[in-house]
Image 1 (spheres, rainbow, N blue to C red):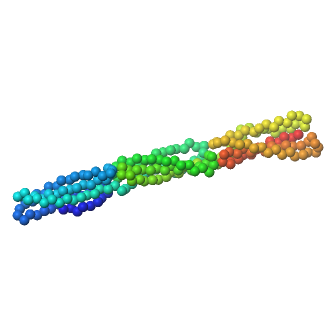
Image 2 (cartoon, one colour):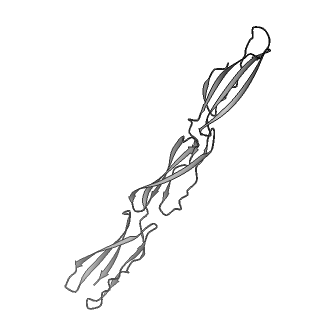
Length: 222
């Protein structure tokens, strides 16, 4: 009779015949195949019971056992990794998977590793699992960077005024492509030839959440 064997569910499963002889006449061989389900679609057992019967009804039976297993993980195809600016629209494509024997489910888990509030690496971990619990895991990395400094939307204009006049100290304003902006101002007074004669320089620095900065200066001549 054919030998017992174990094979992957996607391999060939030969169903060879048995042979028999009799001491006096012809032999007829019947085979009964029984499939016993396992824990999943690609895991099962086939028993092949061969019965050889001669012309007088004398019979002998033997059984071949074929064990089918699924130990192969799905084939997983994930989106390519890429880099983007924090102001860009991120694209979240799905993964695809196929299995050698059954259905596949895909799960994705996202984790973020921040270097600052608007610069980070997003790890998209895709896990493809077949009916038998075999898994294939792969990771897509989306690297988001913030290298663009804020832009001033208004800076107080330079002006010259008499020492007795009002000296307005207006604020500057700025915007950023990705986050909030903090504006610091440093004022420096440079004496002139007399008490009522001096210069004020106001250095404005606009800084975003990731430390990118832009500077501008207003000069007030008194």
